[in-house]
Amino acid sequence: MTVYLAHATSFCAAVWRPVIDQLEGIHCRAWDFPGHGAGPALEPPFTWEVFAESVLEMTEPGGIGVGHSMGAAALAMAELADPGRFRFLLLIEPIVFPGPHRREEHPLSRIAAKRKNGFSTREGARENFASRPAFADWHPDAIDGYVECGLTGEDPVELACHPRVEAEVYRGSREHATFERLGEIETPALVLCGEGSDTITPELARKQAKKLGSAGVEFVPETGHFLPMERPGLVADRIRRLAGTFL
Image (cartoon, rainbow, N blue to C red):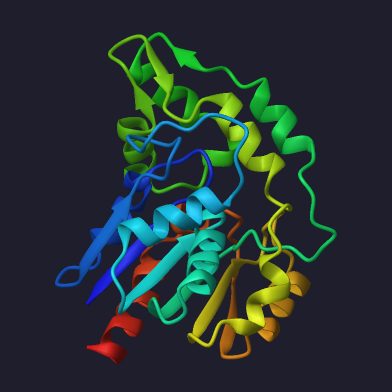
C-alpha cells in the first residue's frame, strides 16, 4: 500500500521530506503538481480541476491520500471523480469552502502577483525564506526541500511556481464547489488543522468533517496553516497509525 502526499500551493513534493523521513518501511510517493516544482508547465487561465486530474494521474487505487491545503482539496476532488480511489484521506487544512463559488481576486492573489520571482543565488533564496515569518516554524529539512525543488536554474534562480501561476491558483480557490459534495465521499477521513491557522477556522474544519460524514477532526495546538512543515513528526505519527490499520 502506498501513501500519496499532495503539496500545497506554490510549494513542491520535497517539502514532505521531513515527514517521509519518519515513515521508514512505508512506501510513500509525493509529486509536483502542474505549475509547481518539476511538474508539467501550467499557464493561466485554469481551474482547480487540473490538480484533481494530476492526483488521478499520479496515484493508484487503494492507497492513503495525505494532502495539505490545495493538495487536500485536490485529493477530495479526485475521490469525488473516482469514488473509492483512496482507503483513507488525511486532509490537512483543506481549501474547501462553502459557496458562493466564483473565481475572484483576494489578498493572497494580489500578493502573489507582485511576488519577487528570482534570487541571485540559491543560498540567498534560502536565507530569504528562513528570515520570513511564514517560514519561522518550519522544519529545516522542509525549507531545504523547498529550496531544492521550488526553485529552478543555477544562480540566478527563479521560483518554479511563477507568481502569475500562484496568483491564478488563489483566484480559483473558491471557484470549485467541493464543499457541497463532501457528503458524497464515503472514504473515512481525518481533517487535521492548526489551532493557530489563519486559513481554516475551527468552525469551518468542523463543518468539513460533518459534511464528510465518516470523518474526524483534530486541532494541533501552537501550529498554523503550514502544519506539515511545522510539525512533521506529528503528521508522520498520524500516517503511521493509519498505515498500521490497513496493513
